[in-house]
Amino acid sequence: MARRSALVKVILLGDGGVGKSSLMNRYVTNKFDSHLFHTIGVEFLNKELEVDGQQVTLQIWDTAGQERFRSLRTPFYRGSDCCLLTFSLDDGQSFRNLANWKKEFTYYADIKDPDNFPFVLLGNKVDVPERQVTGEDVQKWCRENGGCPYFETSAKDATNVASAFEEAVRLNNVEQVDGCNYYLLLFSFCPVRSNGQSISAV
Image (cartoon, rainbow, N blue to C red; front, side, top):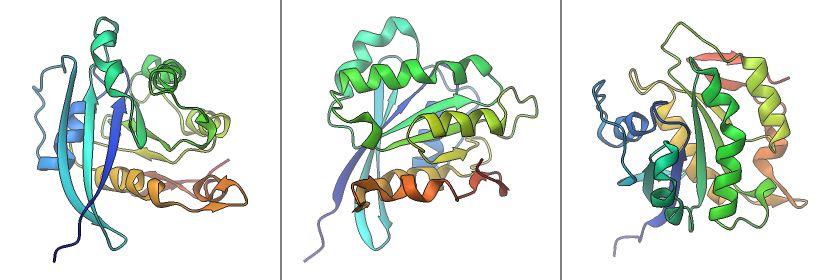
């Protein structure tokens, strides 16, 4: 008899235009469409995968980043197992807005202990040369927000896309060590994943 897959629900949050839909489509279909329309409300796709020997159905929810769609997206936050906070490396404002996205998610998903909820930070469009967000800025943000894992991704060329989503799955199978999330302990000496290069944690 086939093993039943575990269902893991992850949600992509961030400003409009940072590439959330493109990341989801790249991961699930391995395709990139530079003319993809902005999401209206929410969309989701499923992907079957095996992570560390466990069969998983990953349910990925993509949300509209524009303020006018808030009432459409927020009801879908509840029941999320992980939140992928996404910004664009060539858009400093999208990075500065991360705190608002985290606050919105925490409130509407009714997260009682945000410090121990699995967040993953994605700096998308690493393929774009005009960078507005530095590695130091990101490391500071991560330190101030529980040491969440950080990936620099590109939906265009697939850099770190699979690794980021697989990390979201792993964070839901992490044992607690002395009351702390193991990944939070590990992060302070782990390199950030960045286009095949390492950025040392500060």
